[in-house]
Image (cartoon, rainbow, N blue to C red; front, side, top):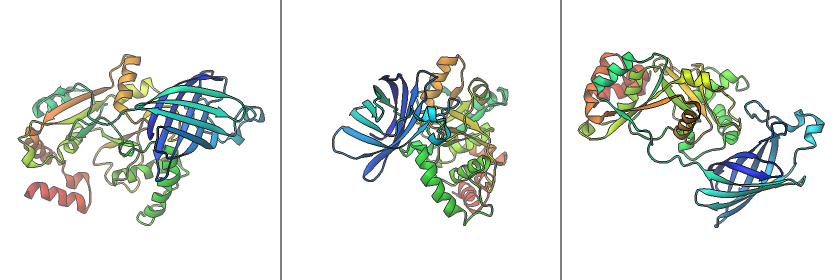
Length: 365
């Protein structure tokens, strides 16, 4: 049952729905967004819990219901809307799920007599990338990036995995829970380790704090990119062992035209927005000595399968946003040698003991 589900609904109202479900020890919890097709009507975010069962039928009950602002479909407290609007909002919603593989028949009923139902499809985000790559030698890649526009983002991976955040890769989906539980605990524990005490009520500091956690290995809904193709190449080849350099495998470097993306689609930096989005964010480097040498920026997303979303947007807009380049493992030694001559080493990109030891390991072993 856990995952990200989306589809359309009909009934008293008609529209689209996205449901994010996390699996807990004894239950499921999540949030269901119901986006009314009539923009004059209020869309809802329904937070729910559901006991686990052995079968394929689950029944959840709401624990909190909030209306969504029209722009970016962001939650607002129900008490902040007018009494007239409040009178149209349910106080209780029951949602049933009949799971059939990757599809779920969903029905929602309210205490004000409204009812909707629909078929939702689960996002499939495991496995390898479906993009057809352009294969290049290291020499060809260098020539390509030198001749390319400078306003591009790059991301290097050791294999051609789908683009996915570490948060979603660990099968977490409910970002409201992430903010209420994970970030609160992280802030309490990391405040003892940082010189700066982050004020999470300030959006810039909240973003910088989440990015700090990301750069130190905590799963977040952020996806790291670099303005430098050579930094991306370092991350692509970084974990390839010298003994693997005769392999027939390839590393993957994604190239993202973020400037066109920003121009075509509004950027939404609200983590609890119900709107599907992939937003480029240049965050502050507070207590984060890695961001500047890595020429780093990030994208925030609430989408489990980023790659499929980008392809969908490409087909809709007519623009090409994402390119995949594969470089063979056999280039590994030459790549790392040249990157070292450029000053791109673990020691320079990861200031501190860990980076220094990793750089020396590359040299000595």
